Image (cartoon, rainbow over all chains, first blue to last red; front, side, top):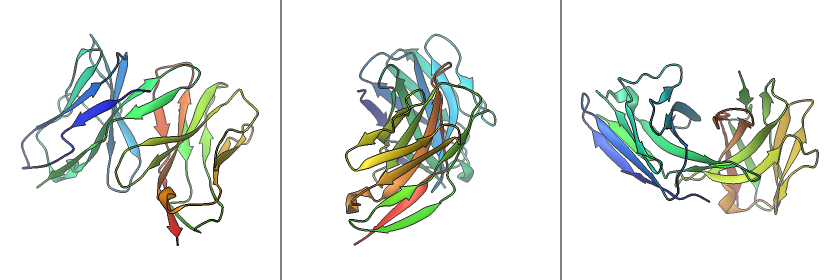
Length: 115
Length: 115
């Protein structure tokens, strides 16, 4: 299994400011994934973070709004920049353990409220 | 592109009864994984059950079993002897084998357990 520590667990932020979310994994992983989950909705992939290269963003998400860092194989950050109320959501990081028992593991999520 | 569809936004079941959650998916790949994840109010995503597409036998995990119909691209989850702790959002998810570990989630089904 993989244990992911994500923080902060929640925050209330003023519009126009930025918030950086951190994820620490207890083992080395090649890729880490960042998802957004709006209230009562499914998980939408924001980007895939590879160590040593730029993150790959999904359609509708851009680096200027959601810059990602991946300084090593166990850590990643997602910044939500210049926030607006529409950014209020849960943000989750995830890793996938490949192999016979492939499984995705998730952080506890960060509940962001922008006021 | 792969898609995952859950057509039941909410369902209710009496405690100790059996309930089936539906999921269909679309893909052109021949090998892939399908999952059911549970997200209780704590937000922590928990793997319920996994199915490898190359296996004809339906996966089972204690009270949880799936009905995997590859030709019909259908992957339903059956919960037997429902318990109050089963109340959660359930997400059907897809991961292709030959690519980049991205997991695609359905919109989810909120399951209520009636005492």
